Image (cartoon, rainbow, N blue to C red; front, side, top):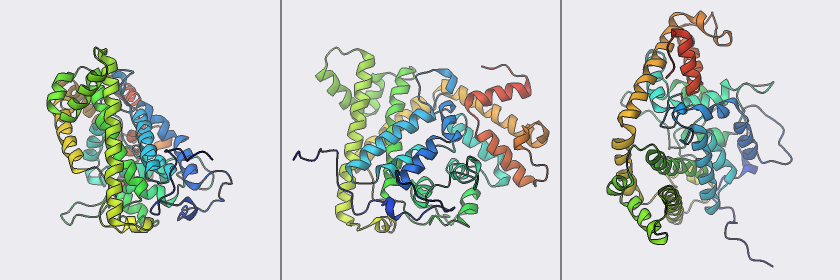
Length: 394
């Protein structure tokens, strides 16, 4: 008998078990061929919101180049990393994957700038939070099925998407949970005060691994900084680059960057698995309920990796996210979204018919406008603004 391949691992005691899911809000017959989490993944992939991620900014506005990451390519990279880490930890790879694929569905056009703008526009109407918008999309805005709104995903997937960064509770200092979350959990309790499954935690850390490393790649491609500058600001990157040059002297610059990023992602995944395995030995969770009740994250990076991450994020914040070219795009995006929101509120008859509801009060009307704008791709937002204001597209 051949030995078991190293990528095949037994299911961990603390893994989520698809055979023991808490089910869906609306009861459905189970599939004979796919687990509940596989079905969740497939529903997300076939959703309209997932397709629109191809036209939503990660850092650069979508029309600025074909090679930069979008929310779609980012989500696919996160899913790949999440599956790899989850498999090594003996977790349910399908649950980890669907949490990764769905985690950015609620993002606006123009990245975090769009989120900031809509949050300001919605200040008097419950605010805007991309995580809460993801839940709104998954449970209300997607309309594909005859018996219910949303995708009717399992409790575990909804929990994982909402709480992937940890428990959600009021901080006691006036900061309240987003309205979309409190409204939903009033009828379907996602236990916001607990930690999510280890699979959801893996997806959250896969997100960190993906954007930390692909922002290096995109920033270098865009010429926002040089490799020498990055090496000075991020020691782990310098060590990876030195290793590549030692193994492949004279390697062309583009291949050097690709190999360096590949190795960095591998280091991050290895660290995540090693540190999480150490925490598992220490906490000894017997089931997924123990993971939720642990009171702290079970999945995480080592202190050394977190220190290296802080240096990298500091560099990227100064040299990429606040670069004057990125700032120009951000400034334009703010004007585009603010002007559209104000116009739609003042003149709701300019909204497409599907987004009008004449009987709505001010709160519902504002949320409807917010939903419409939040769902736009970068290109659609620019085109819609040009149609409304006669502006010239950049």
